[in-house]
Length: 203
Image (cartoon, rainbow, N blue to C red; front, top):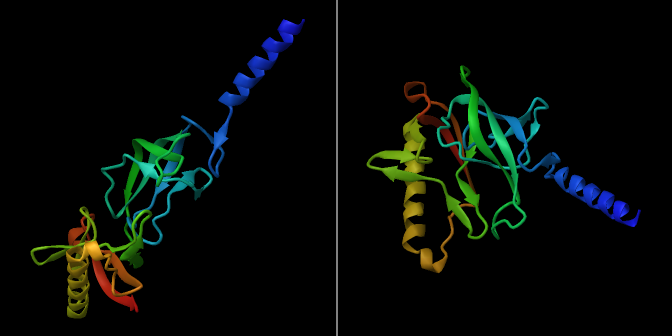
């Protein structure tokens, strides 16, 4: 009888371990889910949602390299829990599996992008690069200009980026606390560029 009780307890412990859940949505390690990805890549409203509840997914997505701005995706992903995450990483994340659907955004509503972001470890950085005469928000997204004022502002920001890179050993920081760019999808370069309508600086 004693051995039977021990066996039942062991089975119970194993079962409980298999049913362990993690993260704000209480998902199991290895559980497959459907996620909704917004068309505003890199924006303030670029929020990953879990379907069908349409609630915030509560973790980042890894491995979705073919994502294009301007398109809304439904994808399948698998939830992972890492008991020993990197010092600067989360203990849970989603890994991309496949695209279920891809739909082009047809609207013209503007959205905001923060050009200064902070990372841990590290500090604030400005998300802007320049190749020739063209400005880039990321490797995938070019910034095109709605007017000459925006062009002058981006050039001013770019000069500060160069100063920061030249003086990285001294820990030089951006000259502004925040930079907000209001953009739309550029109809002439859809999926490749954001048309910058205006830029606001916070000193």
